[in-house]
Image (cartoon, rainbow over all chains, first blue to last red; front, side):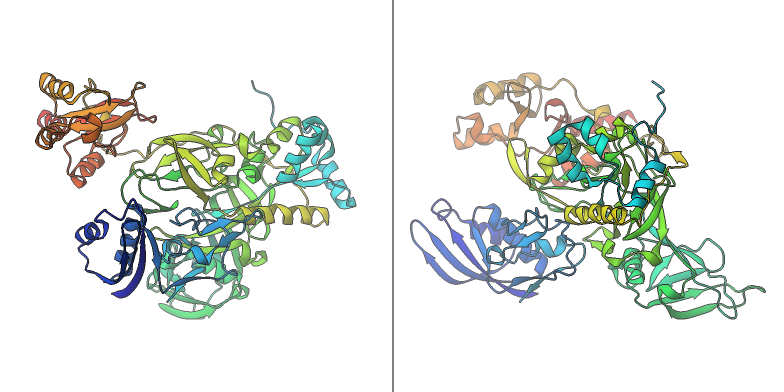
Length: 133
Length: 505
């Protein structure tokens, strides 16, 4: 069990939907709201969950699927470029398109777009990617 | 029809090798050759260019190494043998083993396997060897523990039964959960597409007619020189699914081109770098050597269906796959490779450099590889029923514009519970059940489009019945439309159909 903090951004169309409540029911997971800033057009929540890495990742993917913007607050990527063989196995599984190919077919990581979901870590066949807490 | 393959009508192997020896050979990578053909035409390019180099760098599970460990004193006839805790195959003479790329460590499992041991050997790292034996008069030793490096081995031969697949299926996933496959992470609901193979750099595509590649073809293998020793297992050249069996001396290879890999929830494998020089001996070779990603096609296959005959979602070119976006059911889906195009390019460049500097010569094969060969499925005991054996073929369907009343009377008159909703072409767009109609009545809904389910769980006719029964149970549903590869409804399978089948048994 680890503690994960997430920033959830609701747009005008999502703000009236009970997305978080549905997530709680679906995953049977207590979600602690640390900060909330919601008005009629936009919402920003900071929440924390205590769950296994697997479950946290499932939750993030679910929230993204419901149209929220999700940022993971404490973790970032570390890529070992010596190990990376530029295969691209991490590129299309990335839910926020933070990983792409450069024109010379080397792989490019855009840290600032990363939400720390860990999909690339699992996808990498040579363990060249790490998430740092 | 029976035109002899391998005719040296443009130049002979000897002529090419003479030019290589003098430093005059014209050698281009496949990417460069494509450009020359575009600029000056195929005929002129074929006249000017002696050799086209190719490359591929991807996961090749059918790989491994024969190792001879030398004799211990007192000697042992190894009964079991582990290298860094990865079991090696031991049904050979006393100290010969074969280490397969997908064998996994008994202590570290998916983390470390035969592919990693091969990479570590080539890197010069120390490897722990453990062996046991039953002991004989001639081989009395019963247990052994030591450490070795590649230098201590008499032979370390990479011998891969199936490498360098000409092309491979691209993969996607129609189910509602993430799948972790040997084709990598496949996101739910057609969330992404993964593919493998270097397309316009792919060695076996650049000689798709097998005019030059055969037993004895000298190649780039794992950063050293190796040879094609025959067709690979499951070689299926007439469907552009050719493969090769290769061997080479591990002691001359480089770890950069042999990488142990762990595919999440699948297992371990070995990324192998292979490059083949294609001598432009005739116009047929020139033609295939000039094939571009736009001309090379493969199929996107649904890995959500756990069957040997996974349904084909659509045909696709390597150009579209490599663009990063493919269209599936009118939606843009991100696509990415599992094999490294950057490394494939590096291999083609390296091979070109070797030939230019006169350290690598082309070789006329002793025998060409077969250009026609069928792949048979495994023979199974008994017959497993398939969806098409049980499904109802006369399907009652409705169109999205129909009223709820019309649909309700269809359900009653035809005595069915499931009504697939199709568009004008017969393509599935939704489903309505009698339960949905009841709900519509209760909630006072008027429009069919408001009550129909749009994400429909389906089956394909070739699928084993067992698997579809599990799918229906998982989703808690009592019927699935049966669709063809273009999602046209060709039947329906309900729990009633299945129970009738069981009663008939």
